[in-house]
Image 1 (tube, rainbow, N blue to C red):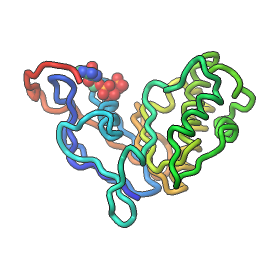
Image 2: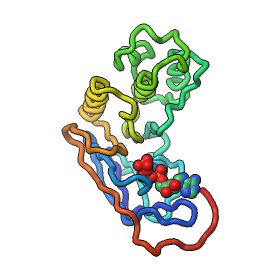
Image 3: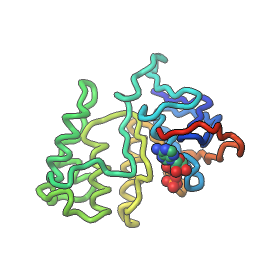
Image 4: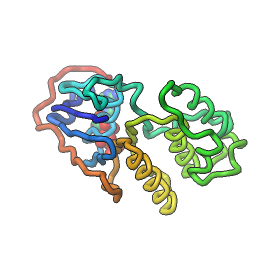
Length: 216
Ligand SMILES: Nc1ncnc2c1ncn2[C@@H]1O[C@H](COP(=O)(O)OP(=O)(O)OP(=O)(O)O)[C@@H](O)[C@H]1O
């Protein structure tokens, strides 16, 4: 499996944020995306995940035979928000994601095992909204484990995590890569994980505004 970005550019409203972003990942490799606030890291991840159109360039995931795989089936996208219902219990939220993301080829962990993997045994019965910010983020990470998908796209995955949970994320990500997975993560600091490179995004040249109006 491999993932390839070729000369991608991203726009928000009138502003071209970045351009000429290219990289290549193979099974077992990861990439952190760094750069100043507002440069477009989240925008790039949303384009890669298929949630926003690219201004230019392409992103593709291919299997070992070189056949293009639908990106939406190949990725887990974890944004700034945790995408959990506050009123549902932790277990109900994860059970929803397990069935929503299910496909024939990729079995993931059971809901209790995923909760254990983020070291939160015993809280599956609590409403998600009762959890602390760090616990909520860890349960959001558990969502990556209930179904197996090759490419993790993560926006600030360790936001709100304490040092111990930061390490926990490191071991989950390392395990994913060791199993042949890939990861692209927007972070403010490069992650200290073997097999993970870094790409610093630079703002597009000043003067790239088009004068076009509107929000996307
Ligand atoms: N819907 C939108 N319409 C227009 N501009 C937007 C929209 N959403 C975001 N922007 C702008 O796009 C720019 C890039 O935002 P983005 O969130 O991708 O940056 P980032 O590099 O992830 O920032 P941070 O490090 O602060 O998280 C920002 O200037 C932001 O204000």
